[in-house]
Amino acid sequence: MKAAYSFVRGSRLMVLLFGSVLSLALVFGASSLDAKSKNKKFKQYNSKFGVMAPGPGGKYRVYAETNYIYRNVDKEYVHGFEVARKDLQRFMGHFEIRFPEPITITPELEKAYTVMEGGKFIRSQSEIHWEVYSSPFWFSPDDPLGNYELKIFIDGELYRTVVYEVVPFEGTLTF
Image 1: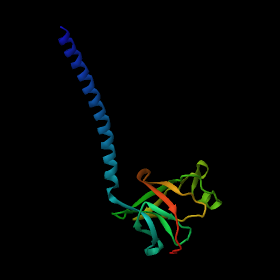
Image 2 (image 1 turned 120 degrees about the vertical axis):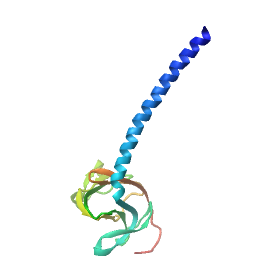
Image 3 (image 1 turned 90 degrees about the horizontal axis):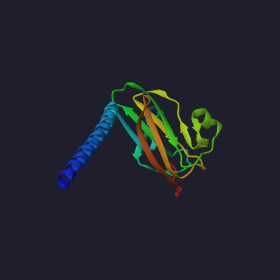
Image 4 (image 1 turned 60 degrees about the vertical axis):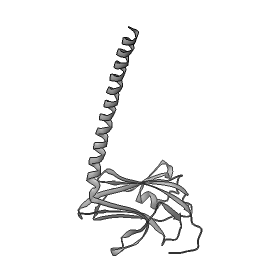
């Protein structure tokens, strides 16, 4: 009798365990389907992050993709991102940057961005873009070293997150 009871108890446990696993699979399956549908929307875009230079029409374009950016205060040294839409249609875009520690808040910074958390986080205004959305960044001498996080939003949805490291510039090379 004892063996039959442990079999029944074991069977109930297996049913409960299977039901729990099935529930989790449905929940995660639904969220991964949701993520896939979002990814389908963004298949019409290409993006790059890294070192930039002026391109045609004066718009900055990424010429060297990298997640290691030198803190070089030379105004010719520019880093940032570009997002290109393949079908040349317009789209709305904005970005957010989280710094490893607060940056200096200037009137120009406050005019151009929404500054939050005492300068540790900034958000750009949402703007309409045609074909290419490009945003170059320059360094100030007191900008922090460390890990930065850039979030790019397309049509109000998170398109891409880039974590990059800002490291000391130890050269005399100018651009």
